[in-house]
Length: 159
Image (cartoon, rainbow, N blue to C red):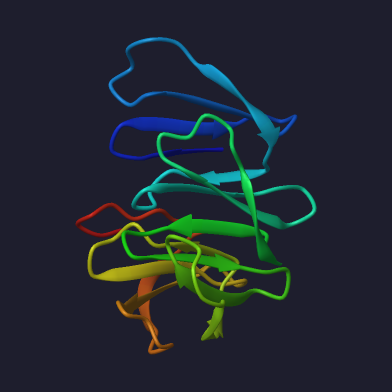
């Protein structure tokens, strides 16, 4: 699993080891300390991730492995420009300011995977693989999109 930010591509391997590399492909993969099952490089100023115990971590860019645990449990997380979004094992959706301040706020709906990288919307795949979009700031007003996906990822311009 991997995720690209503006400057770096981040990824984790089957052993939950964390790696990063320049997004233009120059240089080589750099191994960083810590273990994550999922990493998100798209957050403004922060890298976000979750480990195999669903613990949540953030690292201020440029991240060299100084992971700080954030309260809560999520199975998947994705950082947007102003907020980070994630889903837990009950497919409940949560959001928090991207710097980790404040408290997690639940968003109505159920998703198994969420993508927050879009400028105007967040996107998600529901447990039945249906695709949904919610305009930012998302308060739970989901619009169904044609198709079916196990997971999705959005760019600045959309899905």
